Length: 507
Image (tube, rainbow, N blue to C red; front, side, top):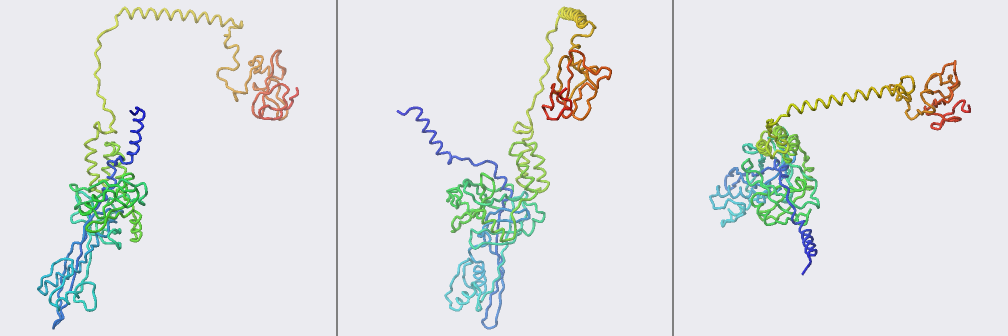
C-alpha cells in the first residue's frame, strides 16, 4: 500500500502536467477589441451588352447586382481603414458568367439557369454565341461586360448607421485568405471610428484566442460573438478546434479577428469555409498589406479616452469610470460598448461593488449617561491636589536657598559651572573644549593680545585686555586654527585637522 507521502507526490505531478491544459481565458479583456468589430458585405454591379449580328446588328444592355460574399472584419485606423479576408470582397464565382446567363436567356428566349456555371445549348449556332458571351472577352465575343464591386462596412455602433458605410478596396490578395484593405468613403471624416489594437506578429507564446465574428449587421441587440479557440502548437497557424471554427466560417466568420487572450490585441484573422480550407492569416501579413495600400494602423482619440475608462471600469472603480465613459460618448455618442459600460457603472456606483466608493459608516447614536460621580469624590480629589501643590512650593524654596549658597555669591551652582550662556552657540561644535574651567578661558582677562602675522591662533573668546595679557593661574589658554577652527594643542606647529601652519607654535 503506497504511503501518504507517495500519494501526495503523485497528485502534485499530475497537477503540474495538467496546468498548461487548465489555463483560464481572461474575462472582460476582449472589450478592448470589440468596439472595432465590423461586418463587411460586398456585391458586384455588372453592366453587360449583348451583340446580335444576325442581319441588322442589335444591342441589348442590362445591369445586374450580384451578391458576392459577406463576412467579418475590423477597423485599424480611426478614419475608416478596415481589414478583412480577400474572399469577402472577391467571390470565387465570376459575376460576368451570371450576367451572361441572365441576358442570353432573356434575349434569345431559352432556358438557362441564372447561376455562375457555364452551360451549353443543343442549337449549334446559339451555343456558339453563348460560349462567346462568357468571359474572358475576345475579338469575337458576343457580350461586353463591365463589373464594379460595391463594399459596405457595418461598424459596431449604437444606433448603427442606416445602410452602413460605403467603402472602396485599396488592395486585395491573390488568394481567399490574403488580407484585403478597405477604406470607407463616408463616415470616417472626423477620424473618430473605434479601432482595434493590432499586434505586430503571431508570436510563439500565443495559444488561447477568441474568434470575434459578426453573424449579421451589428447593433446593441447583435453584438460581436466571441468563441474560444487554441493554436496547437502555440504560435502556429493550426487551430485545435478545427470543426468548430469551420462552422463559424460557414456562418460568416471569414475575416474574423483572432484576439490574443494574453495581450487583448488582434494577432490575425481566419479565412476559409464554403469549400475553402481553414487558414489563419497572421498580423505580420496584415501589416504588409497595409504598407502596400499606403496606410498605417493607428489608434484614435476616442480609443485613448476609452482605454483610460476601461482601467477604472475593470478595477471596479465605477464612480471614477463614469466621467471617463461619458467623455467617450461626448466624442462618439454611438460608441456601443462605452454606452453599455456607462449604464452598468451608474447602476453600481456607490454600492458595495464599487471599489472606489469607500466603506459606508453608519452613525452610532450616543449612549445616555447612566451614572454620575458623587460630590464627595470631587471634594476629596481637590483636597489631595491642594496638598501636593503646597508640598511642592516648600521643596522649591528649600532648593533655591541651597543653590544660592553653592559659591557664596548667591549664584546657583548649576549655572556656576556652565561653559556658555544659554543663548550663545559656537561653530564648529566639535572645536569647543573645556580645560581648567572653560568659563575663565573665555573671559577677556584670560585671552591674550591678538597674534601677529598670518596663521596665528585666535582664541574664541576674543582679544584680551592689554593690561593683563597673561591668563590667570591654573587656567589654560584655548588656541584655535584660523583655517578650520579646530582646537590646537600645546606645542603644535601645524593644525592636526587641516595641516595649516601655526605661527608661534613653539611658545
